[in-house]
Image 1 (tube, rainbow over the protein chains, first blue to last red):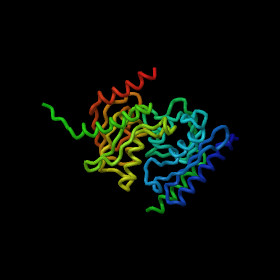
Image 2: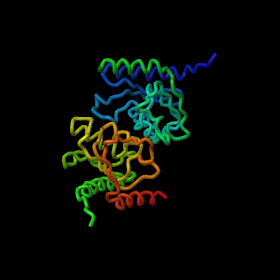
Image 3: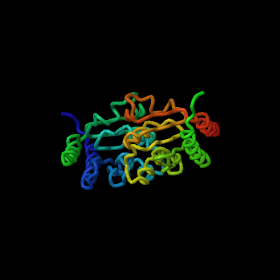
Image 4: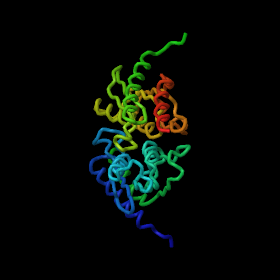
Length: 148
Length: 148
C-alpha cells in the first residue's frame, strides 16, 4: 500500500480552508499557508478583488506575512502549501524568498510556472504536487461555473 | 540623425530619481513610474530591505499604487517605466495587470524576464529597452561595488 503523508494532507486542508474563505468573498478560490518547523506561521487567500490589486495572490500575501512573522525575508526552512500551482509572479516571489519546499494541489496548465523554461524556481526548491488536488480543483470549478 | 523620444527619456529620469532614493536608503537602486495619458500616476522604488519583504520590488509597488489611483486593477492604457529589466515575479504582475507598454533601462541577464520561454508578458504588451541604460546601470554598479 502506498504510504500517505498525512502531514501534507493536513496542511493542504488548512490551505483549502483559506480557499473556501476566498470563495465566500467571491474571490478566485486559492488559499495558501506557510509552515515552519511543523507550525503554520502565515495563512492567506486570494484577495485581488477585495484589494483591487493583481499582486494580491494567496502566495504573495502568505510570503509577506511569513517574513513579517519570522523577521526574515528569506524562508529557506519553510514549506508553502497552496491549493493551485503558483503562477509566474508567485513562482518568482517563491524564488526570491528562497522557500525550501512548495506543495500544491491542482495544476494550472495555462498560468502555472511549470510551463516556463528555465524554471523560475531555484533548483534546490523541493516540489510536491497533487495533494488533495480534486478538492482544490472542485472549488475552482464551482467558482468559474457560477461566473458563466 | 536618429530621432530621440524625449518623452521616454523624461519619464525614465523620474524612475531614476526613485532609484536614487532607494540608493540613499541602502536599497538595491531600482525605480519605477507608471504613466497614464501623459501623467505619472504612481512612482515607487525598491523597498525589500525597509519592508523586509522580497515582494516589494519597485514595479510591484508601482502597480499596486497605480491600480489604487485609477480604481482599476487592470492598466491596459498605462506605461510602466523601470530602470532595470523586470524579473520573473514583476513580469508576471505586469501580465496580470495587462499593462499596455513597458520601458526599461538596463538589462538584467541573470534575473530578467527576457530569458524565459514562453515570455511571461502578454504578446500585446509593447516593450522598449535601453532608455538611459548607462545611468540606470551606473546606480546599480555603485550600490554593488560598495557592498564588496
